[in-house]
Structures are given as C-alpha cells and as structure tokens.
Image (cartoon, rainbow, N blue to C red):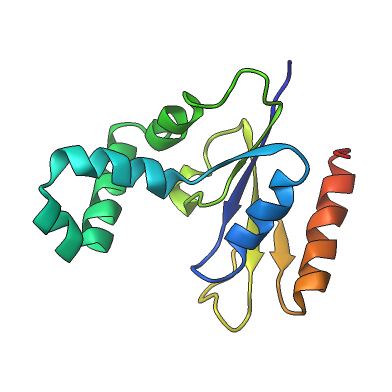
Length: 147
C-alpha cells in the first residue's frame, strides 16, 4: 500500500495543529515530532533540568538527532504508525527535514505570526477566518485525491 505523507512546516501559532486536525478528519495519522523528541529527552535529562529548560533541551536534542541522520526523527516517529494507515501528516516538520523525498511538504504561512516565507515550498496562507483556512486545507486534500 502506497502511503501519502504530508509534512507541515511553519512558525508557532501559524495553524499547523489546526491543519493537522483537519487532516485527521480524513483518516490521516498525525505525528508530532517534538512529542517524540520530548519522550527521548526524558531519558537523557533529569526532571528538574527538563522542566526548567524544556524548550532549549528539546531543540538541542532534535538538532543532535538530525545531525546523526537528517531523517532521524522522521524514521523514529514512523515506527509507531499502524501498518493499515495509508495517510500520514507530520504537524511539525522542520526546514532541515525537507530533504526526505517521500514527504510532500507544505508551509503554513500566517502573515501576522510567521517571520519568514519560503518561496520554494508550496504554501497555504492562513490569513482569514478558521472556516476559510479549513476550506484551503480541504482544497489541498482534493488536489491530492483524498476524500
């Protein structure tokens, strides 16, 4: 069974989680890479360190894993996907993880939140109401022949 894998990139609060929730309504299995990174970080750091420096520790742990292999966190996350899932969405792909050719990446760009727009990545602009954003995601799903 050929899988369709979507990767969402974008800044915090741009709409990636909302987009991921819409994908889930179409039977996508949603993966949050940072959740996997946090899970691993719990084994590497004590609770006090993790609670006081969580963002820095998670970012550094993710960076180091990616340094070992650019697909490190993607591969580790895909291990837990049930075999019967045909559709997968990564809700927090990083710009450094775009080299994986099996993932179709889309940037969620929200003008009042996003610091930068990558012109070489297909973009879904989140600049209207939730209903309008929902419609844009559904249009993408139609283009991908996902019903």
